[in-house]
Amino acid sequence: MRLSAFIFFAAVLCSCGGGSTSVEDYYSREVKLPRGQIIHVEVMGDQRDMARGMMFRDSLAPDRGMLFVYAKPGKYPHWMWQVRIPLDMIWLDAQRTIVEIAPNLPACADKPTKDCPPYGGHADASTVLELAGGMAEKYGLKVGQTLDY
Image 1 (cartoon, rainbow, N blue to C red):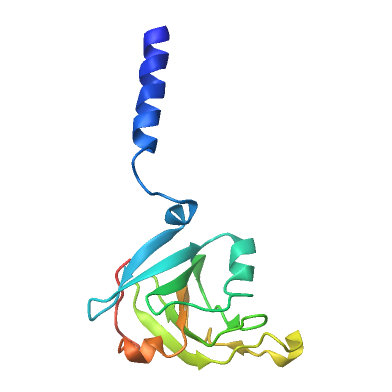
Image 2 (cartoon, rainbow, N blue to C red; image 1 turned 90 degrees about the vertical axis):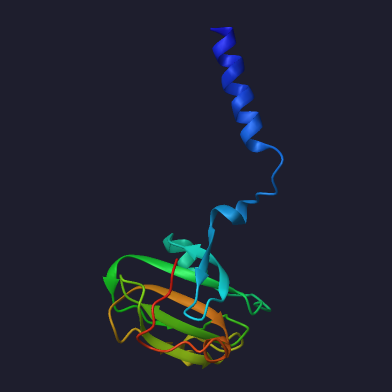
């Protein structure tokens, strides 16, 4: 009994050490774009996290983003209330094909909610990828392309 407990705890300790894994690593993944670029995204699937999204952030690196994952395909408009930076929003279907792009959406941090319109959500999508404003064009993203994640 003691030996099995020791082996269990030793295995746990060995699997935990040595790496630089952070909490963010468990909620992130890589998205490979059609031209081979890699974007590191935070994955949002919890309703509370999805509601907060990019709110209150002052910057977003060119190789970073946020991926909203929905439980079922649908029309999911997004809005920019309390978002301080311009964003590109990219809607993808269940096959990870781009079905809609809303580029360079303006920040809407200092306005009342009624003055921050919703964007997109015109086509059925399973995920929405948010990138820094202008990055969809820089990466050559177009409707009909497929991403790998």
